[in-house]
Length: 485
Image 1: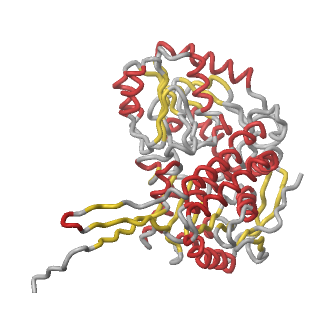
Image 2: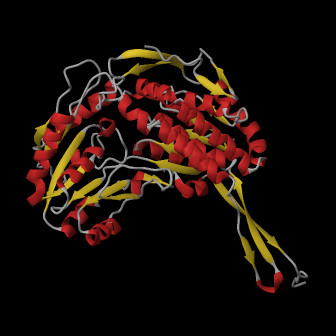
């Protein structure tokens, strides 16, 4: 089982290698096997990528939006045709079950390429009629060279979520995937090249934080888009601010999911499963603080434990019968196990799970805690693993105050059959992405992003266009010019 790429980097339309860069390995999380060996980008590779992006961007921006969109839509078609092979790469990269990657990763990337490819030809400015016959108009222009920095949980999707709107607006991009999941973005670059993207418009280089630091502080870069943790976001935001660069930050969360006693039990349990155990809990928008109305708590916990006990199938993620995969790495597994230990030590009741699974790889059993209080570590800090915390509540006003009592504001959700209450609750959430009787869906047509410490800006939808372009205002005088002297 190997997924060795042609070379570590894809720059200016071709694979390039520089073995002087520090070596690192891509490990299959299901068994610890090394599936690829790569090298970090050296200063020479970083410079080559930025120079290629800078040189290619003006001609790309000068093309009509329709022409740019045609290439992006062609790439979407290729991605869908190769969905199975791309999904296998994604599974080797992340450890996520093939059952999941077949429907959630390359397909989501293709959706982004298709959506923004369709928008590219519609990008226009505005006309303003002014008094006395003067008028003005705006032109929507590309920013220039954009840097994308990806997280390890959705490498194909993130490469496309950042690249698609950037390219649709006429920008070029240098994308750095997480060093934990380096393979998938290279395939995105290959497909864009095959679809007709000019050389240098979309480049992929590998490396750890030091490589990202060189990218975001380079004078040639106009925009930085990051998906990552809050601590990383703070550092990147500060570094980008030094050069007054545009930024989009999609960061972490500790999102609340409120379940009222009138909710449909199985829908509420399904929503909480999607909010805590999909991708083995490695999703930034997860609703990990599950507030359950006290009268409903026992039934909810019992059904949740039953569903997890009977429904979870662990094993080799390449087996399509498997629906639950490992943590992405040994490091992440150890972090999550540490949080589980804190939950037990601080007095939460372990309803199920709580252990490393007795098998190869970085598997942790789906874990449910009840009796969790707001001050416990597992209720305050982002765990990024399969750990669900059940917190009791009695009153809507009380639970809203508790739900919003966090520095994060990425997502929030509510389950209830009272739609008046549902809309009142989401209006009161301090979060950028909210759900009613559903959770964790992120179609490309709607904005995605957070508030407070969970991010700046939005990804997807027409909102992303605003973050990868800027208006130029032109005033047109139609009369004689008056001056005081």
